[in-house]
Image 1 (cartoon, rainbow, N blue to C red):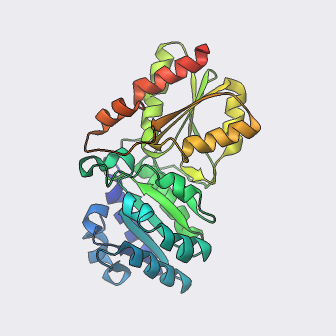
Image 2: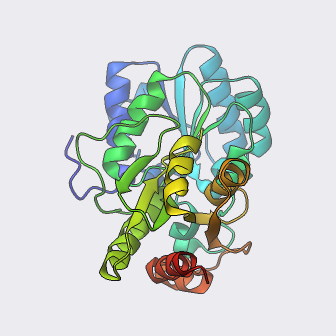
Image 3: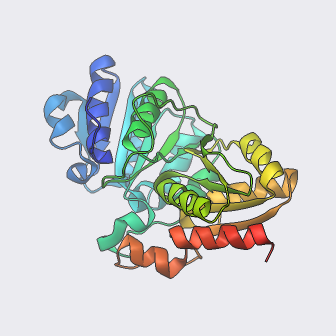
Length: 314
């Protein structure tokens, strides 16, 4: 599969085609947003027998997926993040997580990437609410290479899973050798002055911040956490013991998601200076990513400022 310059939803659809060809038990489910997810026409034409569009009925999609999973199928259900998490939370809780059904739920356009759709569609709490659900694994890939590796791992494991999917092009972090392992962080930059922890959409920002810090004579340990749950506590503690200060940045409300996972871990196992960056417990609005980064304070310059403040002990 050619991944260069591809957007995530294109790779999502192409990977589904590969997975279906390898195992006809894999099924693609949609709730009238298949063009937005990239599966129409890619998957719907290539594998019409493995493509189900339930219409504008996300809760029903989860119920159908749970029924398919109970019969040995491997359903991938996609919708806008707000619909794939908030709207169907009870159905996921009972039919997927409580029953421990092998359903893969894909939340597209997470956080600020919902941009033009505004506050109603800008879901800043999906990592938090999914992370709080027993049996649920919670992932957020940062580029198309990691997405491909993650989907291949997901189909091989029988477990409820929630994955964020950025729809636009994301830039390159990994390459064809990328591997994904649940519960493992990836050190993308080595440093001893501060630890920057990120996931998904904000990992590129974290790397840019590390480069800016280098110009200031400071080195950042950048931990990318594609697996928000299970969370790599050991990697964070090891890094924090060296740097003694941690900045967590995420495309989410700062309550309950990656930053909270970091704070909980450090509070119990390695108390150090820490700052959580993200959306400060507010709803979204129609705006560009850059505008929202600036408004809520989690763009590259804000990460650098937070790191310097912690390093200097201010």
